[in-house]
Length: 422
Image (cartoon, rainbow, N blue to C red; front, side, top):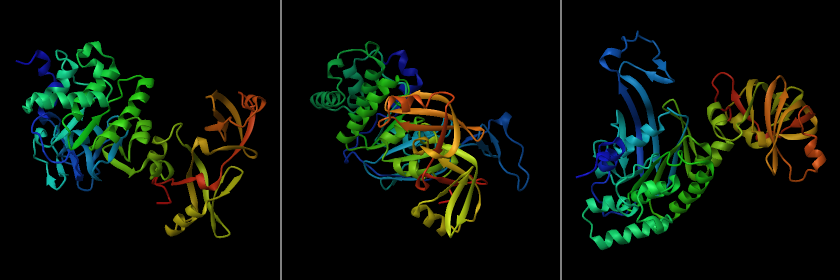
């Protein structure tokens, strides 16, 4: 008989997912077509019928319709075999809900989910050949590390010698061999998370789902575990879907990133694509640390047939690539929101005036918070080739001038927030 712990949500969820064993090769493509999740209104909170043409109400940034609260709306994504996909966005954006629909732990309200060529909307979690690693480890406290990892294999009635081999292989990959005889309470947070990952990978699932697995760890341990997950990915033939609100994790782990907000996909692309070509203002400010500077008093102009941006006393001609994209979209001269990343701003003898408010020395760079044009501008300045006197000149209260080249400018529509390059 299982202990009282088994009645908890995490244990019940894990039990749902440790069922049938697949002898097929442990990797798979996934297709999500117009996946939607709607949480119906309870009887006492049903909304009055909306008038014809009336826009759906929004509450906590999620749309509310007659059917209920839309937590995920028309999510479309094709995931290749062995691809590492990261769903990233702020709390409440629908990323964990999407993951749980893939796992079968949440019912899909609309759309189709395929694993390989098989539609699995109505397939039980245990029959999807998917494993999930939770934020809170969800280990069985009465079992040793060995037994936690072996649990799913024992349910499959796998031979003992084969179980032993798989458990020890997983422990070796995750460097937890020395802890196999311990109980979870004797382990650190990072060690417990390794056990949880070991329990998932030992099943050789087609798809490995990870729901904010590092959020309970301190910063140093998060960095170490991030590196371990990258190594793990190189050693096992599995498709990964990873959920996080940490854009650093997303940028370092993902082959592609899916950025979500309010239940909707904002952009899908490689880390470099979403960093270099953000689709809209939300993506621009969400990806990158420190976040992108946005100047709302800028203009896009055409001079001698070429696009340039004007900001304060500065006119910067855009790069050939940006010229081509703007021309292809037939973009007219207009007031814009200009985006420039802190690391792309340079200190010059001429340019826009500013006064240093805060100077944070970070070793090989200094982070400056500068008052300029009545607002705060953040810039990251490399100190690698600077003298001590030059670094000291960036202290509080000192006047500076700054500039930026045309190829780092991001031009956004003031009306829609969309990148005018497309």
